[in-house]
Image (cartoon, rainbow, N blue to C red):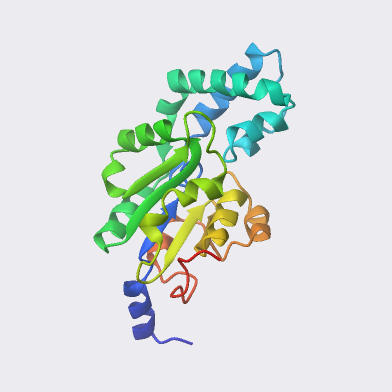
Length: 233
């Protein structure tokens, strides 16, 4: 077992970079997303008896497909959702308690930060500006405006310049299965957060290496040796 001195050295050494999911990890955006989903469903004559909260996180087309929309309907219904979300939803998001303080502490340590989210990139940028934290991130990636880029692993690839080759390795922090799967695809340490919209079982089943219940745990030693992560598996 490492002594206290060794644990302190590990804390100072890593990680060199952290990639954050947005919804359910940095931002509690549930209110605006659910409001926009319900209005969209109502306009299309659909009820909202589905567990809508479970749809927060994955790509939008995947969520509407799960709600029973046909392939040829997905683009139109997703566009309408985004119109509603732009008007009333995005402004309802709030940062989770403690997250902003942790982001600032990581930056003070010299850790490089990025956001990789299935949310459309312009909404992500707007949300981070509203929170007053956009300047903390070296890069922000999200779904493209034309829906050509929606898969989480493809979005994480957009910020690889932030984490590849950094001393101490890199972590990916998120609350859903796609976050963990994307982390593993790039050799990042998959850190699952338990305050978001996924479950412990979902995160463990996806292969999360470390589960945390409070944002400030990200300032602890972490899950162990991360010196070999940060390169694509």
